[in-house]
Amino acid sequence: MLQWAALFWAAVPRFIACFATAAAVAVGLGLTATGTFASSHCQPTVGAGAGPFERLDAPRRAKIGAGHVLQGRILRAGDCKPVARALVVLWQSGPNGYTSRGRGSVLTDRAGRFRFEGPVPASYGREPHIHIAVQHPDYEELLARYVVRRGAKTGKIRLVLTPLL
Image (tube, rainbow, N blue to C red; front, side, top):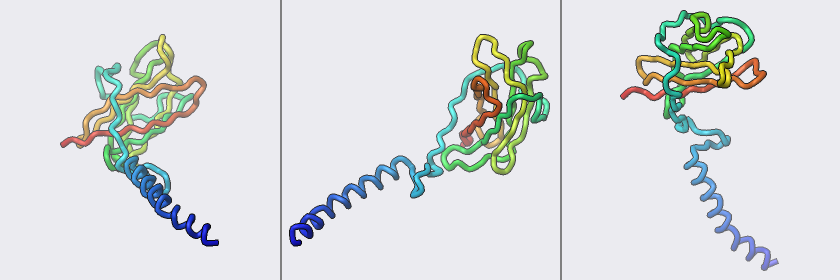
């Protein structure tokens, strides 16, 4: 019986060291006790560069057709707080290329959410995609691109904005 007690007490420091190491790694990764990422883990979305945005004055409409629904969320870098009232401009190619019919814009709600419905974008030698520009007076403008997977009727995107200094 004394051997088991001696083995047990000899293993306690090793167990504590392993637990402390695991906790340090979790903190370094930004994990919370539930295993989810802490809010400080929101890294800014890397922009997709220029798209077909000569003008960002697309009509305010959340639906330009039917066939695909894109739901998104706009968040602030660093703390992942939602960005309310951000202007999200969307533009996609149709069978006749880029026309005003393939454009729309929406404002995010208090939770930073938006919804946009349209036909599945046309493929013109590239994968079907939707261009997205996000504007808000307190953040850097972001140009992004959402690629529509073949056969998908819905999609989701999370975009993280960089606050202005």
